[in-house]
Image 1 (cartoon, rainbow, N blue to C red):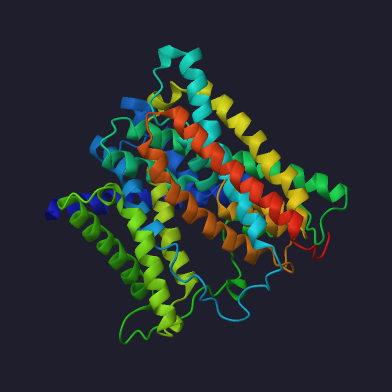
Image 2: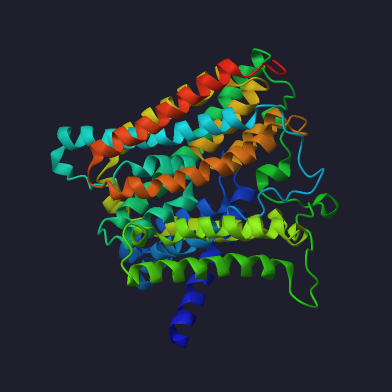
Length: 464
């Protein structure tokens, strides 16, 4: 790599950084963005998209060079590796008192329902693809269409890059369109999830189904605007696990993540060069998760957990996610994506209905305690991102007096790893949409059956 390429990369991140700052400013000033809790990365990305050459062509207010836009589309697929690799780091290393006590039997039903919903969304997406391939053959829908529903709703904007990464590795020419559809799915899910979540909360409040309700309009102003002006109230997020005379704590955590990424590249390179059956076809990110699980276990076994602060890791991955989102949105191939607007609209509408039935309806049956709080957190996760679920949960449980957040966090981590593990078999079945439909639907049904069995044979705790 030449210095010219490094300079171009720095220039590209300078543009993305400026768009992020613009998103922060607009979020702080515009009520609509505050009420929708739109992340600055999404706002900035759409500003770059709308006022850039993709939408405005030669009249672009932001004349971003075409080569930069091509790189923007590649960035999410590159950054997704350290984002995914970092997931297992720090699991089981929370300090005593950092999180609420876990309720008996709370994690399993949240994991089962959340994961079942994710696979049901996969099935719905590919089912939509099969139907519209028959109804509108002139669209020539690409083989992977439908996968974006679950990855967009359940994974959010950050995992849009995962589609691009996988399909690029498999030399699928439609990877950029699929990434664009995933970004669209994530945006629709995020906005719709928050709006519907607020409606559900207000309805539940009138029926007295929430234990520690906060009036949604009474949320802290800094939460809406996106910044905390009072220095005394600003959170101190991370611990200094290492001394700066040796290495900065952030650098230490980043070094672990990057080292695991490097090992995953070396492993996949070795397996491919030796043409090892099956194993040589597995993507780097899958090996990265497995390697990080081993690293995390070794750290715990050596009693070195004091060196790891999960919050530092989260801050680093959040930084990567923000830049991934703004790059993915700003480079969204509008003309290619809009071609599929009809099946997308149908898929999104039915997707919201599906999430409601699986999470809000079945959750009211399977959860033993804090039923609505658990359901609304999962609803936010299944239509937006984990932070959407936490946002909706905070309205219902502002002081985090319930164990729901802890249960939700663990269930989400387990669901994410299982869904990522199942992505490879799903991808390998392309373009056989029928096989993927029945595989993902079958997994969803099995998980729901396990949830029924767990509900039947587990004892009732604190009914709410």
